[in-house]
Length: 322
Image 1 (tube, one colour):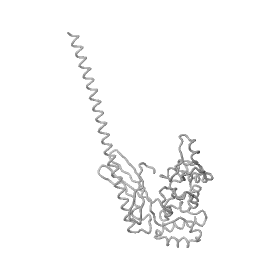
Image 2 (cartoon, one colour; image 1 turned 90 degrees about the horizontal axis):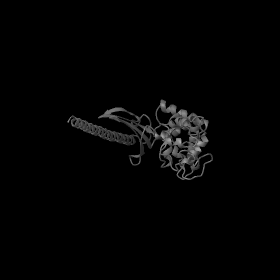
Image 3 (cartoon, helix red, strand yellow; image 1 turned 90 degrees about the vertical axis):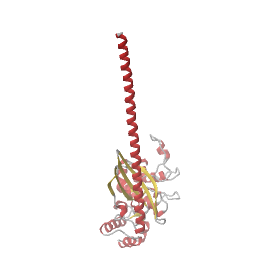
Image 4 (spheres, helix red, strand yellow; image 1 turned 60 degrees about the horizontal axis):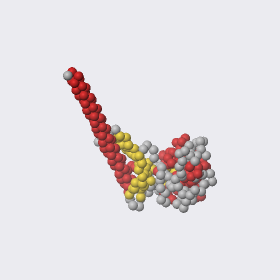
């Protein structure tokens, strides 16, 4: 009798242990499900806030067009950053950057597939002056041209598929325009050190017409302006432009800029080689949101169409780097 009671007790304890284990598993799975749902909701809400910032940026650029379509400079409303601002459940921030103040990597190859001599000269200057000694500027410039063009003909000192397929892991040249300037890290002969040095001066966006890649002197850093032309006079004039821009005012028209350059000693032959403007059509919105336990960052590539009084979104990408 006692033995039967002992067996029954053990059986009950085993059943209770099994039920407890099942209950714990169900509770744990429920907690995971709640957390997954919470993450999903917070992530979706964060994305909606990022898209709201995008709408804000588009509206700011359209309003700027209506106020002053002739020029763009860093004292305008679009250039003012939104500091971290509290919203329900978190905070948002954003900053619009003028991409036409930087060198467009996609300008190296024209629509015909031929290399742009002026753009190649500018790019080699940037690499020579600022990338550092860890690379060969001529090799990287030629390899970058080969990265863009659709053929497999190697530029003088460039690189095509055969140079990349032997790597581990292997990959091919793009055969198309850069989607992101960080693609430079894939170029044969490019080092991370050189990329860090050159990154503040280069960008990538579509070249719809030649003027799309003209440098806006109102927003370009001195380093970019110094490489508009390789002669010493041009570098001196670049310094004059920055000094005038910083101490006096932005250039309001192309005619005003042209007069200033000629007064600084530039010849007509020099001016013709400068790919410059005072207005911009391409911008990058860097947006960020903190919502719940989520921190999201997005980059929005924006194209402003002055003739149609609108701004289009060309690309969105998540992450700290574009």
